Length: 417
Ligand code: DOR
Ligand code: ZN
Image 1 (tube, rainbow, N blue to C red):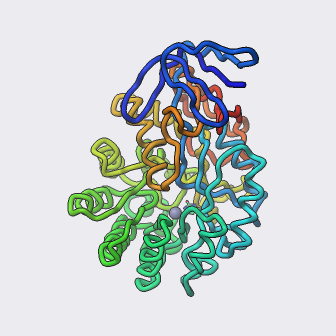
Image 2: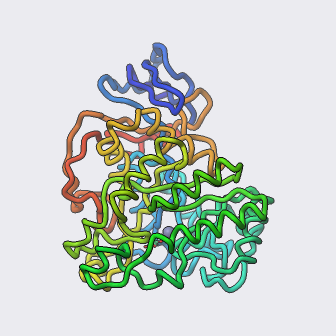
């Protein structure tokens, strides 16, 4: 039995075509042309919709194990499916941290029931403490798809070098949260006008880009690939652009809030606009868009970071982080509609992230995993956090009128939303 999606716009990183898509036995069996349904096939009329490859999301906090009042693997994957995401990397800053094969196994087992492809990132250092490297080989064997100390930088050069070398040897992408804690620890918002007006500690641009410089230097020394998480400053974009031109194997991601908003948003003292790295200045926002346009920035991820309403209630004491999986595609289509083509969006949200991870998917091609999102490009909707599918409500795009909405999501040929 197959699913036949009739007469849709088929969006790939390398172009747009029109026709039918056949999903059979978990893969795309036909892409384009006209498919003739056989007895028992399910036919879905998709005229007026377009089909994106299922989104591959490089940066998600599922909070499971240990903080399931914020999110768990099931609720996070429901939110993913509603956002068109069919593959996601979950970060290891859970309780306990993902630094043992048992915890990797726990995530993989629990994710099986969700219908979404969950790729656990294991920790670089035990407990994300910076005190000793994990056993990457054992973690990889258990199913870890990447390593990261996300939420914190790996401050020790030797440990980061070791992770980069081992990551290269084992084929484990190293995802780096770059932050100079000696400058930024305890910071609440971007350092500058916003931190001055609010009277809170700032996180400077240099605390991000200085550590990106160090990380790139170490990757060069290790002759190993490295991926930089959540790029938010203009200097970061320039440094990565220059490193790529030099031939360094560096890739990076940004998140929609960095190309949509600036630190003006936090002046109303709403903690739902606080994340790390923070919303920056207009020049940074424009540089991030420039990086997306010229290929310096490889991917759009969300850094989906659920926190409960109680935790987010007080502006200053609230933890950093915002949710975004259910709004990332719509926000990108809405706010970069004049800058990005639909193929650019598929490149940044599907194809490139799959290549960075080294996994199949991210394209609608015969033989590829039958992961796709059917999108109505014209539907307008207002983001109401109460109506989102995850467990937390700290949606950075709350109240925004977005154009373009995921209508159905298929993963491995099965409807998951
Ligand atoms: O805003 C953030 N939230 N940045 C991080 O680096 C960690 C994340 C979290 O875990 O909440
Ligand atoms: Zn991070």
